Length: 260
Picture (cartoon, one colour):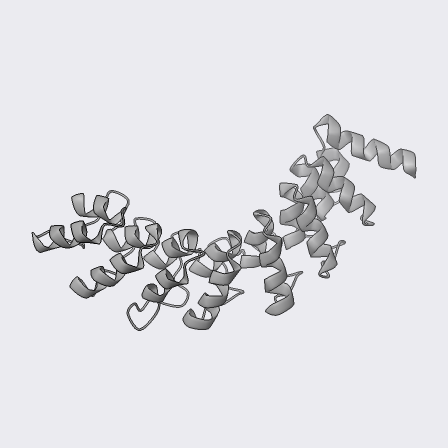
């Protein structure tokens, strides 16, 4: 709608004129976003203030995948805490663990995108749970390992006391498994420095080395070897090296055979 388009800009006078001429702030687009969603995404505190003044219930909305304006603000307003002031109580009353269709909470969004300052605010103002799980059973720590957000990982473990070896999903994966599968070498080093168990195995008795090889991540396999992890069979008798397909991954095992 014209009002939604106006909310993507900073021109508050145009927004006011449209509302005064009957534009409805509660209408949604095809993705289920209303004007408050859009203003949150764009990071316009003055627009949010006005929308709440003329339509106090505009905050109470979800997209088609159950994402609230609080989720949206986390992504794009990471350096603008004035925006978040409008999506916290008393003006807005989002549930502390309002997850989207995948069970992702605003805190998880902040952590997996490296917005530690937003995560702090959500803990303080929104009673966020740092160990909540998504629909698959993964915690913020595991999601941060997937996206290589090392500062967020440090924050979770060192400041909040999250268990670095905590398990995720029915496969019982650790953050180290996730980082290895994605090939995030620096994140692997960060997790190990914070006490991650390099010998941890998942529910199928697969180590992080299995995860690295399944993901065809040569650099990750190499750093795990150098950190002291040895290849060993999983619950089905499969070695990590048997999962290697790419030449550079196979070469890592050849190098280790020569060195030993």
